[in-house]
Length: 295
Length: 292
Image (tube, rainbow over all chains, first blue to last red; front, side, top):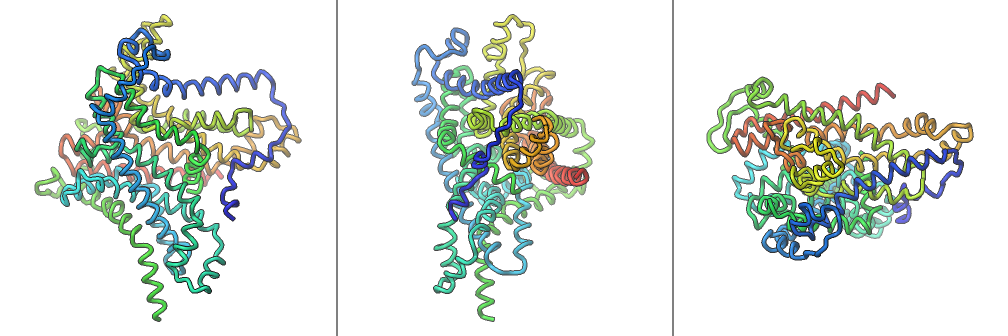
């Protein structure tokens, strides 16, 4: 059954058809186009990486697009220390991990109640949660800001974690119900006969079988939180609490004329995501598809 | 009876965390935004009830420039639907044909979606930099020095310069969604058409595109609501300047709140954004239904 879950759209390649009629010239043109677009997509990343290792003299004329002549790793240490990137990085991790944990717990529990327990309003409650998919994050910025400042929670990690979790919830429930629907109800029945209560079934049967869904939701939530700017910018103004996107903004203000450390900061913020993408590209792509196509 | 009570308690217990988060952070604040939008309020002092004056002012005052900001974001939405999406669809159709290197291309094209918009914005700031940015350096080197501009600092070019990275970044996202759709079209269907003598173009036109219409609809909705909400890139690149040339509703809202302390007006813009997003989503749904 787990194998069933992991069968994905990418496996359909097995049915490749073989009739080919395309002209050679057409094929060549298509490839030229694709390679050009590849270049457009990769060049900024390459350029970012190389200028993170150069001094201003190279960036500003001597060697604009080539590999650095002197690999200036000191850019990284100044970004980390003077630019506080180390702090921002840790903050981003704390906020992201906490958000993922809260989203997962809340989404799993709610989905279990909606799809596995029998009650009248389950469908309406589900529709209610799905409203969250269309609500823009801007909608609530004023009231949340006012409330947070009243209860003196501005400039805390929670000021970001709670809103992020709430805004990730709708997608979490949507993805969860897709996966939970694939778990046969006979399993619940069997467990009940063996004397499991609803909580027992949830923790012992459902949660372990939901692992692929957890990964999907985790990836999706990670990218939302890791890159979010508006809330992070408004709710946390203290340097020690800034997340990466806000931190980079601060750092680029601080180093306006010295591009090397800015480049280093950009690489530091991007590197974990790209590194994960190299190993998990399919899984990451699937989590985006799962969110949009089922919606 | 007792069993039923326990069942109900269980249901409530399972729903509780999600409900608290959802109502506390999404539903209640939206209602509050609607409420605040009826007041003249600096966020801390007393609120003065002014009815719908904020809405009237928002649409009539040139000083606020909401109409201009809205037009900018609708222009972005138009470009997104008529330039970005067809381009993404083209890529998806080509890659979906199982060509060589399909996976590699797909992964590279999707990469910009994963990078933080702030990082992309900072990169493009450097690309556009008037004296050292690679765009102007490149133009100078190939002898087109007269084409160099202060891209983000000139009223005429700033909006375009903001749109290019915005559109570029999400090509990969729409491509991926459509690609997933293209891949789910039954190969038998394609093969049958091919045996009947259809060319690749005809297969796409008469089989693949009609099959993936639901996904195209989702893409159109995302493209439009995304454009209405666009904030990060513009905030990083120009923050609405020069002379409000690149203002969009979200940058205007942040301005109102944290520069001018007009919380009532900020809430009014927030409410308008929600209304517009929902209205467009419904409209697109309806258009696609009628056509089907």
